[in-house]
Each structure stands twice: as C-alpha cells, then as structure tokens.
Image 1: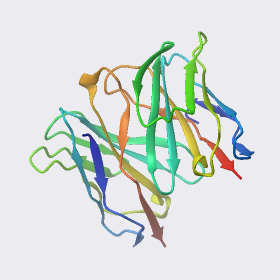
Image 2: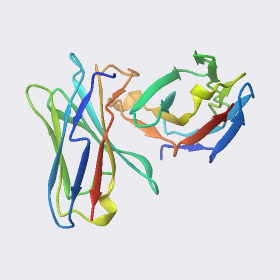
Image 3: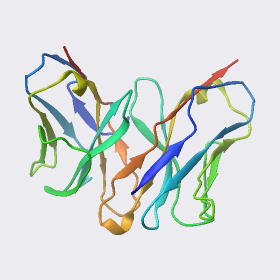
Length: 114
Length: 113
C-alpha cells in the first residue's frame, strides 16, 4: 500500500538550532513528495515539493531531497526561528492513479523557543 | 488566506444525529478534497471530487457521503454520528492538474457528545 512514516514529535528546539524531521515512504508507483505545514488554528499550507528522484524542494529556508534509494524525504532547516513553530506533515501523491489525493504522515509538532 | 471557505467553523451535536459540512473552493479550482484529522488517526483522506464527479475514495465510512454541485462547492454529510467521529474536517481544492498544489480551508471542528 501507500503510506508515509514521520518521526514522532513533539520536537523542541532553541532558536537558530538545526532542524531535521525524518520522513520515509512506501508507494506502489512513482510518487510526488510534499511537506505541508499547519500553523496554529489554520489549515495546511504547501511548504515544498519534489516530483522525481534527486529533486530538491526548498522554500523559506527549508529543504528536502527526494531519495529513491532510501525512500526518504527528510525536511531540514539550518537555523529555525520562533515563527517556524507549527505541525509539519510529510505527504505523497500518486499521479498515475489519475487522482491528486495526498497520503499524509501523522505530523510532527515543532516548538522553537527563544 | 487560502481562498477555500469552510462552514461552519465549529459544530457540536449529539450521537445519532446528522450534520452537513460545506466547502467553497478557490475560484477556478475544479477539484475538492475532504480530509479528517483526529488525534489517533492523524490526517486521513476521505474523498475527492473533480468537476462534479467522484475521482478518488479513501477511508470514508458508509455513514458519510459527499457531493460536488454545479457551482463547484461541496458538501460532506455525516450521519448516525458516533463519539469517534469527533474530529477536524478539512476541505482542500486544487486546479486538478497532476502534482498540483492543494489549498486547504481552516477546517470544521466537529464535536459529537
């Protein structure tokens, strides 16, 4: 089946610390991979995506590389800010099914303290 | 603001009742998706509609149904409600192109008492 496994949170970091949130996937085809972020009281927003192996998605200082050999899409940021506090979801989409629905991981809550 | 509107924001009801959640997609988006977010199950895909037709089905219970109307707004109907149906229900929309970005509404918080 198709699924996404994320590292469990919560994660608490000090401002300017390095962030890694691990994500691995299982898919029957060739998925596109995404990171979505959910700020308190809001819906999910797309943070970055990668559509094929070795692609690197990046946005707002966050980046993730699509690694087919390890079926991973780990999220990293070199220096986190308090405003990065949110829940982060890794997701995959199988385009060849004709549908665009996303399979999400369970989410990882990040809290950044000053 | 994502441009996706969900109403109501909060809904409190009793077991056995039926409720309807409404979603208006972003202008121009043809696809609507429904997701359920609960503490124990995480974010689960329920169903997708594209231009009025059902496109994909996920973990949607038989007690739940959805439809997309000609003006592209969508409704999610939940019946014979149980305590375990308490969750945050998200609607998302997209143009519908493969790999396209989904835009999420801020959700409807359903509490079944």
